[in-house]
Image 1: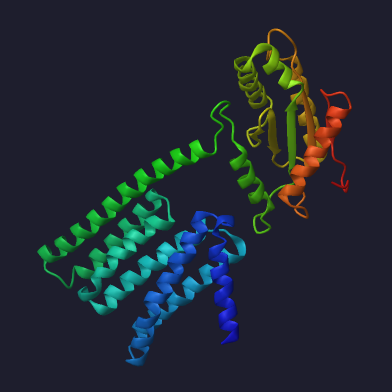
Image 2 (image 1 turned 180 degrees about the vertical axis):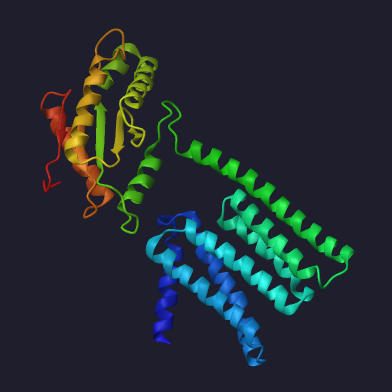
Length: 342
């Protein structure tokens, strides 16, 4: 009993800390928990009634959902697990209708809808459509044509409406997500997106290639605002981001860290390669006409995103290197050496 309480407490603690998990992980785990709570009583009841085959189907589903929960908790890999859960739902529904007859056909409706919570709309539509074909094969020998057509039409309409709703919701969600994680002035990712991405790299369950964090700061930017005005300063920030996009790789991510300070995650780059990238960025900015009246330069600090450290330590290390670059006269790059203290 004590162990059960500890397990339950750990699971609820995981759900309570869901901000550290992706929304997909939380939804998948919750659906599996609800499915276990829904199917297990039927399995035990059928076992008690000695309906061995039906009980075996129910208990097999319970075990499958439990395995998915453990897998997601340990690895955080929810995409393939979601497909398997949808297939478990579909297979369980078809087996239930086959063994129990048309009286249990109502399971098709929650099964169809659940797929849209855990899968992309097109994938859910494909799996549900295949399930309807299987349902036709099972019920065609049990029902008159009109009754069969009625059931299939209602199931198909539920599937279609769920697809339309999921597709529309997905478009709206992506639009809101883009707005929430984009800097309105420069169009690059913002501090919220940086924190999320750093957390993703720090997640030990998700392997990433060795990567580095670059912090860039425009030199003497305050004087640009003071002398030429904030409109000119804003134009410099926009042009800077254009230069950064032109001289970073497709796999790199650019963020506005705050004010005139920007961050770049150099994905898959060791410190030496990240140092070369930083030097190329520094030179590109120095040679670009960000402001007609005077040259504009940047100082850059580079730190390795070592998984033995936290995102806060990565930022602190990169910020320390940036401070040293400015101390050395600005328009320069400093790269943290391996093992160098923050």
